[in-house]
Amino acid sequence: MSDSMVPETHRGLRSFAFGDGPALADELLDLVLKGVKTATCSTEDEPNTSKPGERWIVLDGRGEPRCVIESTEVTYRRYGDVDAAFAHDEGEGDRSLAYWREAHRRYFGRMGRFSEDMMLMCERFRLVEIFAARRVVDSLHALSVPSPLVGEGQGGGIPAWGS
Image (cartoon, rainbow, N blue to C red; front, side, top):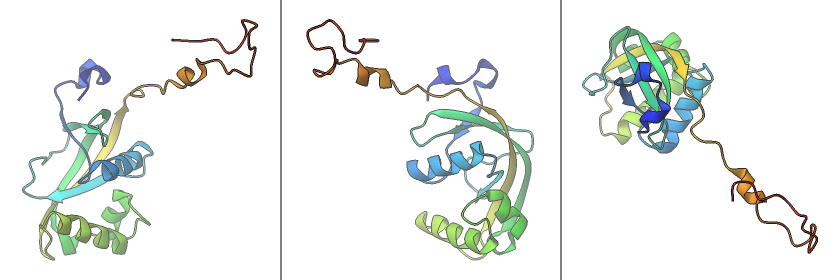
């Protein structure tokens, strides 16, 4: 993790990435950054348990810090007791309870941990801060090689910025 991306006030916070792989981490992070995802859940025995007021650095699929969230509510419920309001706040798919149940059945199934009566830590959170862009795509390098068709032999062409 690149500490240079994290403001000093947030260094030392625990960090995590959503999901179980880089693509899902990026997809869920995007929902958080857009303000759509304001809740998450995990098995009750995962190491990333939280308490209200605790802040976390959220990592993208490459392990880079992207934002800070703060837990606002933590409850423990069985899978079958998760309600439509919580499913909506998780922000995934069509935000329905039916979608939530199927997506989480698959997710926890991939981990070999799914059961109809499994206990979940259900957490609501708020977005505290979004970190500056990781790095600007250096598209100028694509322009640094003059085209043989532009200003050929005349000292013209496209300037070679940053070469």
